[in-house]
Image 1 (cartoon, rainbow, N blue to C red):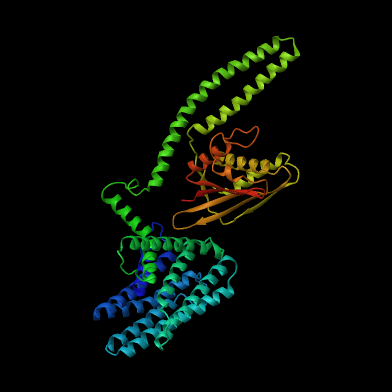
Image 2: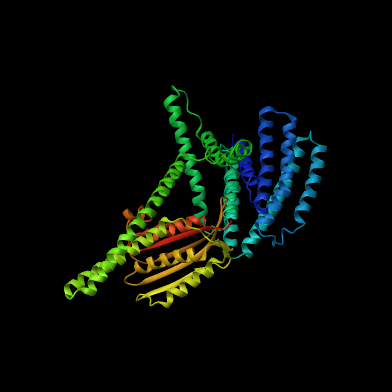
Length: 507
């Protein structure tokens, strides 16, 4: 079962990478490597089950093809500058594979010779690639060195766990862990190459932890169903159920994507058919918001007309009045009318549909321009502004005026959250994963923070904790960012500060 699970995991990873619309050379190289591993392990599994010679030859072929593909992938992973893995190394490895294949197929009836030749060839290639990996770790720097060191540690752990298989061959009662260890290893490497902007080990492990929790959940549901309806039958082996659950979890996304493309190509655009119930709830919420926005536009215009009449009458009465007390009351009326006019203007800004004029721009340049304008005004006492803008950001399709409005709103909110002083930090970074490629702007303050009970209402229109606020600033920000195809998120600790993250897709 462990062999079948490793083959299934390899095949799933290969399919999920090959069906991606964006074809990355590193991803394609890893997909081919996993495909060769799946061929070797599936053939081994069926040979052990059926004993047919066809499957034995498939296993041998997969193991031989695996080696040059491993070298090619290792070279791409290390950036092509590694001296132990030159441009010709994969071809030399392939030539060695041809020689091994000639010997193996010529003496295929000699099982001992076949095993020695096959596994000696595989061990030499794996050792050479591992030596190149260690060399790259020692010579590398920055994020690249970190990520390669994580891979080196993962490979070392998998090899050490595989020693249990060797001990079992000498009669020790150790579990067979090699197939499980390498299944986890290839999934770990997948996370490393698919999320190239996750520099920290805990961030990579967090991705793996999500899968682990899902596997435990599926396993728990399975045992609960068996216990409830099994009528006293023996429970399946835990290790087999865990492996089956792992396969189910990682199969979901590629199978769903394949079905969606097939249905869309043959019948119709299948977005609704493949939308979850929770996403359908979101769609209903958007329709309700659109209706409220349409109603709000008419209501705002109806309010504006009498406001103008009230202000005009107050100004006229003020000019005719000879009483200071009356003039003061009429001044209050005029000021409150102006305040209501500002609220209505912001409300219309929120309710009216936006027409974004998207132009390819460098986000860092716009952020620096906004900060330059903000610094021209006198900043509150004891507040400093710091920037940490990544220099390798790609251009973004962006509406300059609308984006500057978002930056101003977030910065002004941050400044107001630090009445006793603090530090305002603006940072930018590139985000990449299998779903999207985007740039992220983070606006962080060290102010009073946001109370937990206010977090869910933060982006709702007219919700505010300020005495003179309209409660529309963040709602407008979210709408502008949404019109750009992005999203805005917030994290905060009461008394310690707040972070707003604006994420805009690159493509």
